[in-house]
Length: 150
Image 1 (cartoon, rainbow, N blue to C red):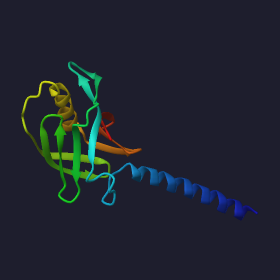
Image 2 (cartoon, rainbow, N blue to C red; image 1 turned 180 degrees about the vertical axis):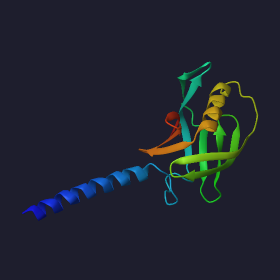
Image 3 (cartoon, rainbow, N blue to C red; image 1 turned 135 degrees about the vertical axis):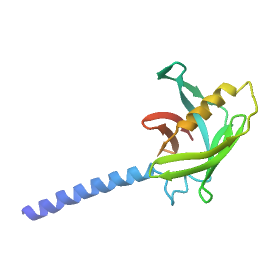
Image 4 (cartoon, helix red, strand yellow; image 1 turned 90 degrees about the vertical axis):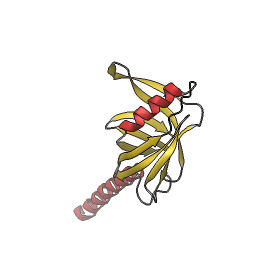
C-alpha cells in the first residue's frame, strides 16, 4: 500500500517541477522562439528615473506605434525607431540577459517627441535583462522595469 502512495506523490512532484520549468522557459527568448525575433516590438511604456532622484521614476505611455525595436535572429542585429530617429546595433542573449553593442542612431531633433525619445534611448542603454510575458516584452536593468513592449 505504501508503494502506490509513494509513486503518486513522486509523480505529482515531478509534474509540478516540470511545469515550473516550462513556464520559465517561455519567458526567455531562445534559438527556437520565433515569437521574439523578426517582430516589431512597439514600446508602450517607458519607466525612466526622475532627474536628481534615482529612486523615483516617471512613466511615458506611448499611444502612437512609432517607437519600436526589431531583433534580427540570423545576423544578431537590433534596429528600430525612437519615434523620430532610427537606430541599430548588435545584441547578444545569454539566458534572459541581453547586451547591446555598437549602437548608432540618427541625430535629428523632433520637438514633439524629443523628450520621450530621449527617455527611450536612455532606458534602452541600461537594459540588461528580458522577459516575455503574455505576448509582452519586458526589459529590465537588473530588477528594475524600464520598458514595456507589445
